[in-house]
Image 1: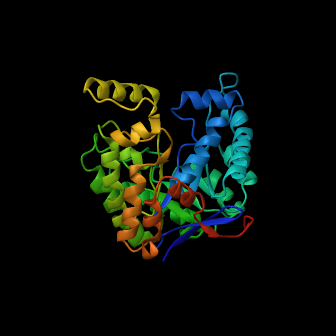
Image 2 (image 1 turned 180 degrees about the horizontal axis):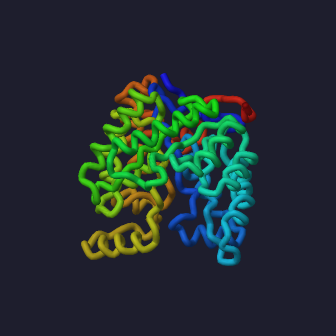
Image 3 (image 1 turned 120 degrees about the vertical axis):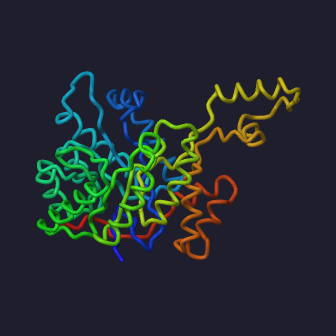
Length: 353
């Protein structure tokens, strides 16, 4: 069975058909996060530190690292992104011991991340565009790392799943020309929003089966894309992920953390409780209040998507004796410790070709 090996200095994450689903934490990415982008430009890495620790505690097996900030002081990412990528990689791997996924559209930033990373990181990403193939595949070969292959090319993103399959096949074949084996290619078949394309779910399930059966490759996706623009996105994501796993998807780039309840939501719920005539003890703290009234937690914790993935691992016999499921459902504090210690012991340094 196809197995894609990703390593940190002390841990190994395996993406594979007969392995537990691999969760790649997406939070260390300034895209669409103005506050994080501003912090990074100012040299403030406190949110990066918090996101790294919270994602691993929630059960992420790999952390995606994206340094794509467009500085106000210098809008040229070719100059600013490589040193920032190096800094974030060094910072994160000093905090957590899970493998990393080096994520950038800037080749120089990809190489900076590869140089700084211990072990064998996942590279994100290559596409079927000729220029991108010529830039990225030599890096993959040079550093002997696995790579995410996104199923779009010079013509853009096709709505036709047969075209997206053909692009993936092209990338796998071109990689073979560089001596890169199929087990080091993790294909992203591109998940379309179900709100814009009613067949998006069916398409990706069919594509994943073809990629597994015909090309023998592992797969990943931006999981939250499926629910973009719709209400109750977690409900859709929770259904999508186990269905994708059943179709053969072996990993996803996603947020494993349920974000904490903020002051505004707390105040609204307290006002609602007071209006209902419920009298609470004067010394009741916010966390106890959240637990009693079922509105979440004041602390980051594993999200509902992680619950769905754990259950699916159990049901597909990828959770030996139900150990992960039992640990995941232990009282608060136990699950976080479990998430932070997952993984197999692996090689210490990257293996170069």
